[in-house]
Image 1 (tube, rainbow, N blue to C red):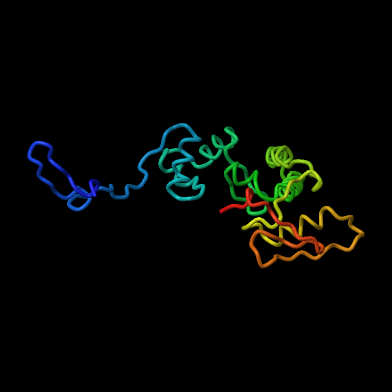
Image 2: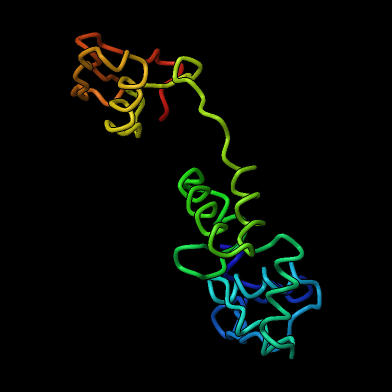
Length: 191
């Protein structure tokens, strides 16, 4: 209750907290300027728009858009996606299906050498395959999708073998793989 009221220590008078009588949240103010640092400017635009907007950055920095893009590229903050021809943040471009992105970038490099940088970075971010035998998998854990359990079990059996059926059990803590019930001990169950 003390958060909803103000108490004057001298007079012991109690009044409503500012939240009831005054504006406590500032109204929305659109971006009017950006810092000159490319990363800080990009982060502010991402926070404002929820996406990369080099046009807005260009207007607020009062620079031509190609110059803004050049600064972001030089700082390794953005990459041009070969299929859409749109720039994406490094975090967005270098995540997801990086192997497919590598193939796309290598193909684009054959047509336009400007994609060499994108291709090189895609290659660096695509890691070699990790055999499923080295993975620890909490099969049957609540929130662990059935399709992931199926894909995992497919990866550990030889390709010429018949793959086991995978199904969830009635209990959220167990799964069934090839007729073997996998149940997590109570200490590892998430609540």
